Amino acid sequence: MRAWLLAALLLSPLTNYAAEPAPYQLKPGEFPPLHSEHRVSGELVEADFIHRAGQFRMEGSGELVDFTLTPFAVVRYRNAEADLRDIPLGTRCEFFLYQENKVGALQAETGADAAANEEQRKKHNAFLKVRGLAAWIDRVDGKKLTVTFFGDPVGIKALFKDEGIEAEKWVKEKRRVAIAVANEELRTYNPPVDNKRGVVLEIQSAPVDNFGCSGERWVLELDLLLEGFRKSRIVRVFVNPAWPIEDMPFGEGLYSERFGVEPSGPEANQFPFRTDFGNAHLPWYQLRPGELPPLRTEHRVSGELVKVDVVKRSGQFRTDRTGELVDFTLLPFGTVQTLHAEADISDLAPGTRCQFFLHPDENGAFTKASVITDEFTRLADEKLTYRVEAIHPDKLLVAWKLPEFENDRSRMEQPPDLGHGELSTDATARVWKGDQPAKLSDLAVGDELLVNLTGRTTTDRGHCTDIWISPDTHKAATAQQLAKHHAFLKDHGLPAWIERVDGKKIVLTLLNGPRRDEFKKFFDDNFKQGQEIKFALADDTLHPSALTQTARFTDNQNIPLVTHGCSGTRITIEPTAALEGASKGGVLRIFAPGWPVTTAPKD
Image (tube, rainbow, N blue to C red):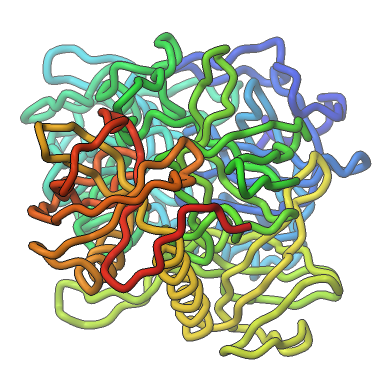
């Protein structure tokens, strides 16, 4: 075991620390000193391989703690360095914590099997060879970069020996190596294109009396500097010229054109308001009368639905972990999505964990909802399923699985798992296979699941309320919900947002969630340009007035999906009689020929 880790294990007091900040504050570009951490023991219950994050259950208290690995965090398993994906769920680990539950080091069970330990060491060396060694930049001097590698000094030396890397020889021979910009999760963009090459000028030693420092510091002179080559920034270095420089493994890159790969996500500086991912110094976006709010203006909160008022399109949910009760109102353009299909708020069952897209009300409280989705929808949107890896009496151990994709050689390829976690189950869980109810005993290792859950507390990850087995079952559930919602729209009318009133013409944005193709087909099947339709003005709860009128449908356009509530379809109608009460930001419902015209809400 590495000396600093052994010293920390022996000398640091065991503290049940999770949420309170540590006295020592991590600083960019600095390795924390020994004994600056708060150390806790716990059982690993979730690991996100891509974002180097997860959750553990604390020993003794049972508290669930979310954690994120620092860029320099050394993970050890079986007496060797490891990645989170190497550690089985349920393994007892020691977590070295700093502020915001950032982990400076993680020590999993050591294991006494020498052969298994050696196998783990070689496995991690192969892992690093594909991705490059992670480091941060200590200094930039012209085209010279001084970088310090992350890792265990013993492990780095063993890697260099295995790979024939003779650093001093590299300097004498002016060997050329490659370096690529990475982020805090050690993910790079497109190494074959974005890497820059240079020679190794000097080898320096770095102090190892801290966490995460390998003791290896190199000075490189590059042909060309990139914007990302700045002090304290993270890089990946391909330290052996013979190492292949290829795309990051599937799902791990910050940029990829392959289907199903997570993009890098938006940058906070793209938005002139606060978001969930940045701009904490700015105020949140304020809803504006007569305007649909742009995407990314929401604050997302997850929690268990407690109650619903269908008539008022409102309800209450209990937030995850804190248990705070939040009253919410679904905005006139607000949408509900369940089972990966559009829905009405009446389709949401109390007890279901949902994600709420919230906006501040006039008092600054987040009570106005533009989107509500269930867990099934979130997983399907991310193209994820849970593949069963083990079945226990009260829980399932599952891997996070992406679908197959067609690679550059026009062959189907299965991406590696993105993470794994546990799902709690009990006798109350409803199970579906095909179009028939099933039982928990029908589950088998290898099954692909989508689920809905209850909310989470500080000690409970929530249990499965519903489990759908196999992709065919998932598609059938979505199709059934979509057909149900289309029947609902025919019965209640299609909601539309008034963009403007131009003389006798009314320009409308049809309201719906983001699934443009499904909505477009439904609309085109029921509405034809030039025909007469019925419509009625509605209130903020989408209940139409008793007065219905006739209009001619004259124009149909596709528009970008850049705001909440937008279906991607804009139409123009011309009422056949003078219309009062219609103005920008108002809502109405339209009825296709043959639809029953309902002017009273249905419970």
